[in-house]
Length: 299
Length: 238
View (tube, rainbow over the protein chains, first blue to last red):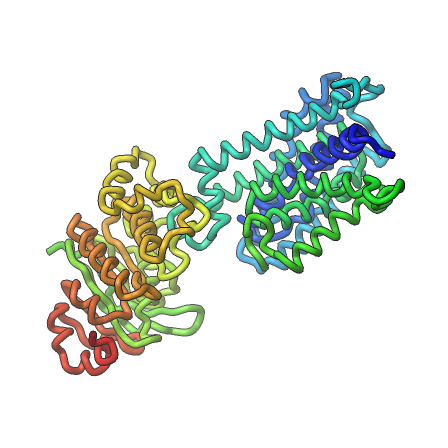
């Protein structure tokens, strides 16, 4: 028999942690989708890149991963903006499908560049095993998980403040609503696009670092979470950053909770098939409510 | 009278298709000018020509005497022309107040006094300022769209069929609002389907047919012109 504590310790908490990482990634996906109108397949590689930047900073300085996080985020944002300048900008007026394919190419190029620069072997951001914190004699939380969840929530609050309080954030939401009207209104759409890459890139970098902090650094890590990240963005509603946050948490929780033995003594879904859960949710949403939770854009 | 906006023998269209064949029209300071005509006459296209949304092949568009032909929309806005498209003219997911703030995007000074003026002009907007603009009624959405355009204190306001799809009750409200905006000193160029009502509030009107000027005159002249009545006002006589 599984006790409630086991449910919390081995399914609920890891689900929240994973979900908050997906949420950070999904915000970038949904912003790019809403504002630039294409599904950015290279988004997963921005996550990977963030993790490798953090690894290099930590290796050079010996800092805590959370101290390396802001710098790695900035570096990832700079690379994102550089890619937009040199690669996506000429496609601005091109049909969406060209951008999607271009981003697919970019994904392969960035991944190869990472493999070329850092090698393909596993690395980790922090070595050693940490003692979990024990609450009420039964709930065990690893300090790492607390830090990851806390950092993710803090970043989401910052994104919320930017989107709801600043002129640029409002302009981003406006352009996500209607790029045509944004232009007629005199909104500097190129500036909005730059800021979208900065925020999306920085958050993707953060998601990658947090994921690497929880697991390890690996060249395929971003690609492996790309599907659940897309699922989270679609579930929340394309173009809806708050939807992406909720969608991320739901997908993360769903993946972890699916492995709980809800019926009988064996896991409902074998942990090996965990990744399939996001896929099932994504297909379900696309079939029955393509606009997602927050009534986002449909195609 | 100062000429605010002038289209001088403007021809152009989308791609290779020419829709406007040498249109002439102008708006003087303080005027409400209405453009009417059958479907496909190029009314909305003429408006888009002002706003740099069209490829002009001949003629000139002048704002305050300055040539703004083929200036991109983002620059036309900065020069003080605000355009309210027929549909998709508000940011539905932004609140009413955020919509108005976006209207002031190109301003670098303090826009709050103007925001206050707009709330005074449209009291329902103040009441609903924190609601998503997309949740408002059709008439109130038009208020948001016009209010958003007025945030720039434009030299001229271009309205593309502001009453399209609205019930007769709201139509009256919108025309009253147009008058009110004009009374505050903003010249207005408006394209309208509801020709009779629109001419009723207009200082002058133009009839466009097949991308060319047909008849022009004061609102009253056009209303009493038998040819115009036969062509456009017959079905709409209330």
